[in-house]
Length: 109
Length: 530
Image (cartoon, rainbow over all chains, first blue to last red; front, side, top):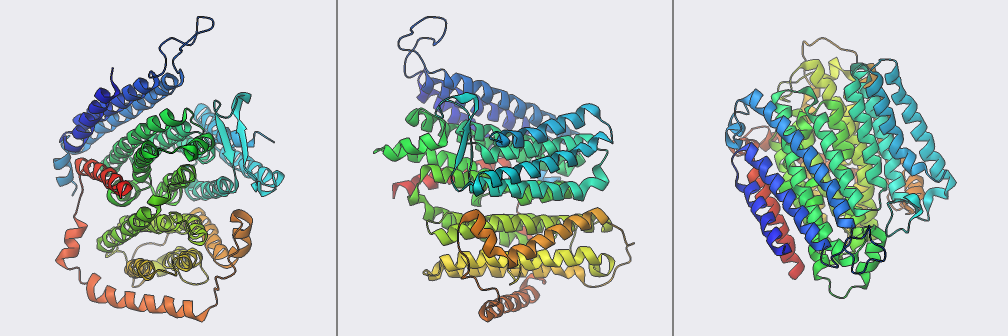
């Protein structure tokens, strides 16, 4: 896959973050952006070489294993943030009775 | 001996886990044991390597430094480590009465210290990302610790905005990894300096700086800060404002050492001015005591940014010193505000009166903090502000900028100091632990304001003997600033015109902030072209 394509997904995610009116949608857009960035990273990592670096002796034209190792960590962090954000959105609904950004500002008191 | 940097990361984390596992009020005292051990280890490490004049790097597992995970200590990171251990001591003393059986709170507090010390020592771009993210997650949990609606919303906002910012950090990381093939900062710096085509490096720099800008509350993207710092429990506000905002600033210093993009330094100087001035404008319009202090954190971050984004050695050291001074006096002020809020039960400064009669010690320490933040001679804020002023002496515009910021700070704290006068019928309360913590911070404020010459020589290797505390010109300057500030306060701010009310009710939504973040990136791209 072309990294340009995954970069377009990043832009879609950022557009969603800037425009969405609902808290859950904001969290989903954050997720989309994170996943797209991970895709970009993996694409860049696969630019040089295509073979797996383990299991075979004397691999020629091997791909860089580091991006994948890094992205596993990034995925874990993304999952943690999503879990925390969803928990907080439940709490917000509990206290304010709404998940709309605008109504939330109005109910500030 | 060699592995003390790793111990510094793991001792607080292990202590936190023991506290969580045992859930026993006597086991909670292990926090003091851990803090004492860490203090000694840091001092020993500093002594053994002769003040770390030469950088020391350890790579885990004995790998080459381009492959392995590297931790680097130099005099800068060491001074930050001393600062953070000190502030954690103060926060633990301050909240011990209230929290000594609250094992969850202590768990998160100690865990946060481990990740923060890791952030200070890492020399690896991806580990920096991880440490910043963990710090964000744990501080979110601490912000929402009161579990009321307001703090939950503030914490949510903080979490979402900071993680959006860090996405851009990852984007920048991709570019820089593609260019250099390594994540080690030193090796990357070396690779970058050999390149002829700097365009991708500039793009990487812009993305990474926008993420750091969100994390350390630069001009258009700071509006998570007043919410979060206003809503958190007071001890956590002190920690957040004093130290955790500096995690972004510290990353800013480290990454600028790596990229060496001198064409952006002027941009960040002016950005610092806008950060400072907008923080002051919002602070002048606020009435909530914690919101005022939180907006002043933004303005002080602006001053720090003006200092550290300078090529000139003097201004740079001034900005660096202001980080330390700000940690002292802003923690002091937040702790004082916490005691006042606890005693009075209200947060509006127009309703709080007669603090000096009811809480004399707290008031004295808070006044010391106010004198420091407004830059009175003999206190620590004066030193760093004077150093920055000396650094920009050649330029009239820059000196005027600094004067305006200082004037705004004075007006705002004249407004805040009205709480000391008058009378009230609130019952007196005793806050031995709180006052002890504030006393230690006040002593540090005065110490750093008077004996700064040997301290800066030891840590930064700079001679500051040209800053004269007793110089009559500085005193006249300070008193003049206060006088003008008092007139402006009486004539404009105290009248509470409708425009001030309007500014008070400005509330930038999450979507708009993201839009501003994108605009921030675009402005930086435009700046890199011209």
